[in-house]
Image (tube, rainbow, N blue to C red; front, side, top):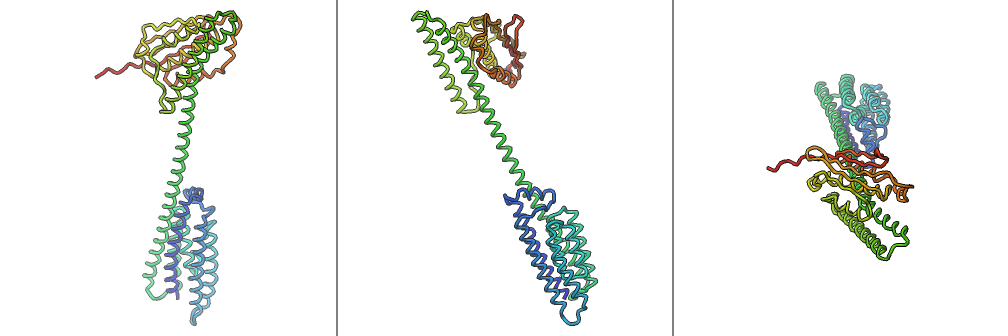
Amino acid sequence: MTGVAGRLGGRGLRSAMVFGAGGPQTGGEDQAGQAAGRRALVGQVGGWSWREGAAAAGGIVLALAAAVSVVGGDLTPGTPGWYLWADVAGGAAACAALWWCRRSPVAAGLVAVALSVPAAAASVAAGIATLLVALHRRPPAAVAVGLAWVAASLARFALRPPGLAPYPVWALVAVLFGGAVTGWGILARTRRQLLASLAERARRAEADQRRRAEEARRAERLDIAREMHDVLAHRLSLLAVHAGALGFNAAATPGEVAEAAEVIRSSAHQALQELRGVIGVLRQSPSTPPAPAALAPLVEESRRAGMRVDLRQDGVRFADVPETTRRTAYRVVQEGLTNARKHAPGRPVTVEVGGAAGRELTVEVRNPAPAGPAPALAATGAGAGLAGLEERVTLAGGRLERGPAADGGFRLAARLPWPREPAAE
């Protein structure tokens, strides 16, 4: 009788290992079960997936079938009466304990294991509960319940000798089955954790990739905005100066009007050309346009607009400066001339460039205080140009100084690194 129960228990445990191991594996891979996979990393079972619930229901059905088979064997003549009542009560209670494994696997498993000592009908339920503990709890708890299952089996075989084989054989079977059930459950849980960890790492990698892509797009938008400001602010201020001169000088001769109109047309054309060049470069690659080779054309352009600009380069050949430093220095001079044209029109502007390779490049733009009331162009803009320029200088490894000068005017100065070019081999 108990030998039949042992054979049923062996088949039942093998079936339980199949569906018990398969459930968590697929549940950890399920996209809808990412949260359950993360809970599996810490050994929680607050909510099982539908596959795990179906596996638990199948285990209960299997344990009930085994219990019914054992109880049927107790009805034969000569079987002690307490066998029957122990199997009926113990088997029913152990099957009920399987359902509570959803909430507390260790406690329910120990209850089922304890019931299997007097009730052979609870042996299959105890084995399935041991497997569920190994699947959903950490290895120390799984090993403890597995050892309890082995001890309960040894006690049951001593209390109710199964026959068909000596006791040492059944003891060996109990040890082997206990080790197999516990080891299989631990292995399946480890694999489920690995799959959940890989899924979580993949999710984080995708999130990091999206974040890096968004940061790259943001940096590209900042580059576009900076280049647009640097290119257009200078040209548009020239257009505003010439247009304002035409409106102010109503008695201008036709020749003067024609000359101013030509300057406006030329400045607008150059602004469009530079804008087209910036957009073209930004579309082709994330690199910035090549740095200008000289400051003289920029200063000469401002002079043609009526500004008095004194350029002092102190022996510095602008073309010898590294490209990044040269581009930043050019933008400093361009922003300084634009601001002087807006805030102090008609006042002289001094541009000084100095330094040497191996030390640093200094760029300074100064203008005295405006004469008379604040010009109309001074009210335009929001200081974004200087803020962007300070960021550009900082990224280039330099520092920017801006503020009132000693004579009441304005001073814009930058100190930029000028590394010595390595000697050619």
